[in-house]
Image (cartoon, rainbow, N blue to C red; front, side, top):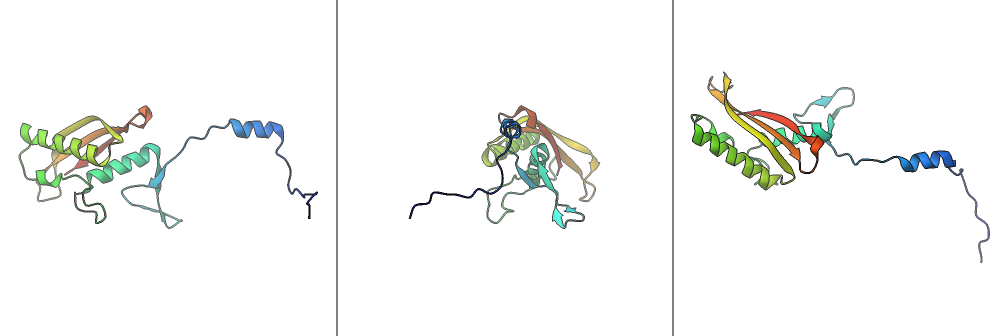
Length: 155
């Protein structure tokens, strides 16, 4: 049996629309969950983040994840809590900077640290009024000039 006829449903896209559709350049977008976790009222789902907001969430989450805290990723995180209750002198400052650079290079080689500031907080931490250590990290995704963000974490 030979098929000699076919039925086409719908219609062809007009040429002026076809040219407009094919000329649109789509940039890939990565979507993730915004951190810290908050619910999206009315939808019952978590808020989503994209682009720089997603990177900010990822860096904030990374700085607040202790190594060994994640069951399936035991080496993920950064050991900042080991520096609590230590006087912030030059040696401790260098150790914190080295810890941050090593953890980022090990866990997120796609990130590039632009600037790292470590100083003692003027305010007291939530633990018995002891001053905390503030870490401000300016970071971006390697090769993406527009992705630079600043994240602050206090230990």
